[in-house]
Image: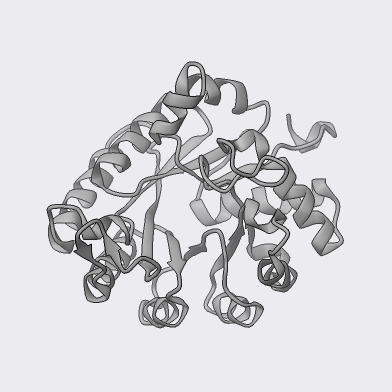
Length: 284
C-alpha cells in the first residue's frame, strides 16, 4: 500500500522482540509464521530490538530474513547484571556485529539498543542491582552509537533523573525513549535535545494518566508508536501474547488522546521512524 494511490498506510512498529521464546511456545509456527502474516499486511515494518549479545544476533538474523524488518543491537540494563562480560568487551563485540552487517547488501542494524537504566528490581536472582555497572554499560554503548552515527533505543525504568543526565552528557547522540513512562515536563526536555518519544500499549491501560499527559506534549515530528511485543499488549488484549497486529489499538488510543485521525497518527509515526532510523519503506 502507498499513500500516493490514496490507500490507507500501514503503521510502523518501532520496538519489538520477535526473538523472544514466547512466540515459539504460544504461536503456531513461531515468530517467522507470525511475521509472514504481519509484514505488508498489518504493519509496513518494525525494529527488532536486542537485549544482549545473543538476542542481538537473533534479532539481526530475523531482520535479514524479512523485508521491512530491521534491528537494534545492544545490552539491556537488566541483562548487564547477568552477562559474563563487562562493558568494554560487550561493546567490542557489538561493534564487530555492526561492522560485519555494514559489509552486507542492505545492512539491517539501524540503532543501538535496548540500552539505558533500570532501578526497579533490587536483585537479579542472587545478584544485587548495581547502578554503577548499569551506567558503565549505558555510557559505553552511547559512545558506540556516536562513533557509528546510529540512534539509540532507551529503556528508562525508575531512573528518570540519572537517565536524563547521562543522555544530556552525550549531546552527539540522538534516539528514542521507548514505551515512555516519564512526565510531560520531561518530554519537553527530551524534545529540546532532539529526541523522539514512543508509546506502547500501556497508553490504553485504565491507570495510564501519566502517559496520556505525556502523549499530549509530544510534537508531531517526534512521535513514535510500538508494541514492545511480546509484552505490554494493549486493552482489550492485556495479558496475552502481544504482536504488531495488536498495535492498532494503541494507534487508535493515541489518535483519540491527541484529537487526530488514525491515518494521521500512522503517517506521522511512520515518517518519523523512517527519519530517525534512516530507512526507506515501500509504504513510505
